[in-house]
Image (cartoon, rainbow, N blue to C red):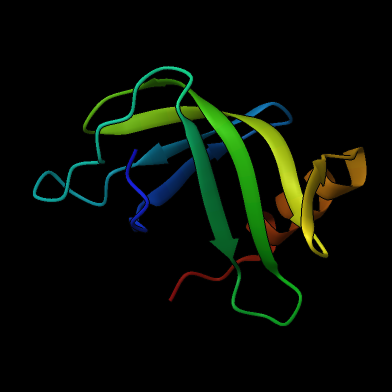
Length: 99
């Protein structure tokens, strides 16, 4: 297990999973095995727009990995995703202005 944060790009987001990409070939993703637990933090840079998502790795290599969504951090604990949570994150992604 690698407890250290690693910056990467969110390549895809669906109701059941998300896909992460390494920033470039010089900075590969850390080794992750199938069913490893992972926490992904998505920060849109606005108040109330930080999402901590817990999931499990379904497949991965040095370039990309797919994580099945399990729970979203709310308040003080990780809780089950709701349809509104998914819609809120997708809306944030659609409205996010990169640089």
